[in-house]
Structure formats: C-alpha cells, structure tokens
Amino acid sequence: MKTKENTTPEPDPEEQPERLPTWRYHLALGAAVLTVAAILYHILVRHSLEQTAMLFVGLPGFIAICLILGAKPKRSFGTIVLWMTVGLLLSGPVLAEGFICILMATPIFLFIAAVLHLLNLWFRGPIGRNRYHAFVFLPIMLMSLEGVNDTLSFPRHETITVQQTLATTPEVIVTNLARAPEIPGPLPLFLQMGFPQVQEATGHGLTVGDRRRLHFAGGEGQPGDLILEVTESAPQRIRFTAVQDTSHIAHWLDWRDAIFEWTDNHDG
Image 1 (cartoon, rainbow, N blue to C red):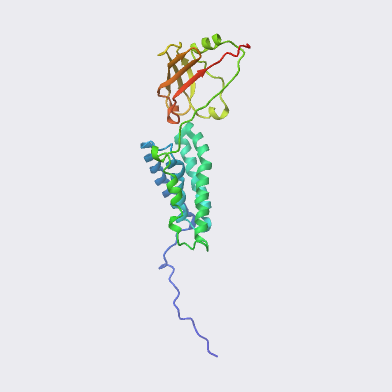
Image 2 (tube, one colour; image 1 turned 180 degrees about the vertical axis):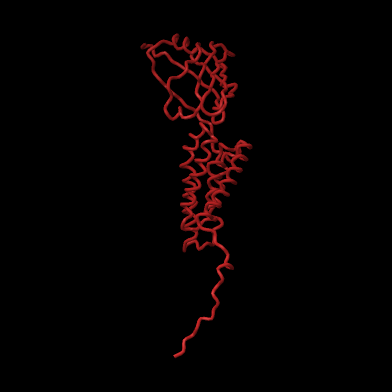
C-alpha cells in the first residue's frame, strides 16, 4: 500500500504579511475618524454652523458612516457606540461648562448612528443585496443641511404667551413695570447647568426710548448685556424691543420683543 506524501511546501511564516490585530485596527480607525471629525467641527464653528443640523446630524452621520465602512459588519455598531462616546467625552474638558450641550446631544448622536447602522444591515441583507448600498446614507446627509441657510431651515420664530389674573390694580402694574426689572430667583436645575444667568438688571421708566439692561454672566461664554428699549407706550400696553444682545444667550436665541397688556376686571 502506497501512501502519498504532501509535497505542497508549507508557507514560510516570515514571508506571510502580518495582520494588524482587530483591536489595534479599530483603535487606529477610531482615532483617525475622530481626528477628521474634530477638524470638521472647527470648520463648522468658523462658519457659524454649529447650531444647525450640520453638527447634530451631519457630524455624527459622518463618524458613523466612516466606522460602518471601516469596521467589521458584526462589530460595527459596537465600534460606533464606543468611538462616538469616546469622542463626546473627550470634548468635555475643552467645552468646560458647555458639557451640558454634550449631554443634550449624546442621544441625538447615538440615534443617528443607530439609524445608519440598521439601514446598513438592511441593505446588506438578502433584500438589498448591496445593490443600492452606496445610497443608504444619502437621506441622512440631506437632513444635515437643515439650518444652513433660510431656504433650508424650518420656521424658527416662536411666540410665548402667559396670561394671569392678579389681585391688584392697573396703577400697581404700571408702577412695577416702570421700575428696574427684578432678578429672578433660583432657576430650574436644568438652566443652572452651565447657562449664563442674569446677574444685574438696571433701567426704569415707560417713556418711549427708556431702556433696561440685563447683564448675563457665569456659565458658558463671556459676560454680556441684553438691552431692551420701550418702543410702544399706551395706557394698557407696553412693548419692550431688544435693540442689542452681547450675552452668550444670543448664541442660541435672537430676542425680538416683549409685550405687556392688561385689562381691569373691576372686581379687585
């Protein structure tokens, strides 16, 4: 009985290309993606786009897409969550009080990553068969354009109305409005987590042209003032219009005006 000897030469271990361990590959991939993402963030800030969907949809979408395409399919979601979380935590020391914004944005970042991951799995499955795999990320990227300019923005104007019945007289209301504004008491806990607060309020009078100055300080950003001017003064109606805002609140909100109206019910 003859036996065959395997004449196939065994590969020389020294000639085989070394494979980068999975954890090292993911480490290098994540570090590279976060580096590019940091550069993109500074570009958004430079062009005043950090309050648009370009940051809250586009940036997490970019990170997720790069990690989805670079990581192994079975581990892509874990890699996305890991590096998305690492990136958000690393930004904390840089943003200081602005870390509250990170806490607010984290669910959005992870939600965008989860949506992209699920879409990627669906298009890679037997239904999609990779035919349109390149287009799976297009809707998310289009959504990131919201807020870039007025044409691509949702309506941003908002009016808040508060109505109360007070046991007082119209004369007392006029007297109170003519004085300097009172600094509000302790704000809700959420608004105490790094947001600027009114530290000083000055100004009086209800004649057209009279002004109020609200000085914001503390929290994120540099101290600054919100200047309100009386632009309408009627017997039962006063309008204060914002004429200047150098506080950090202007980074998020653009004050327009505040209108006070009252009617005597003649019942005290």
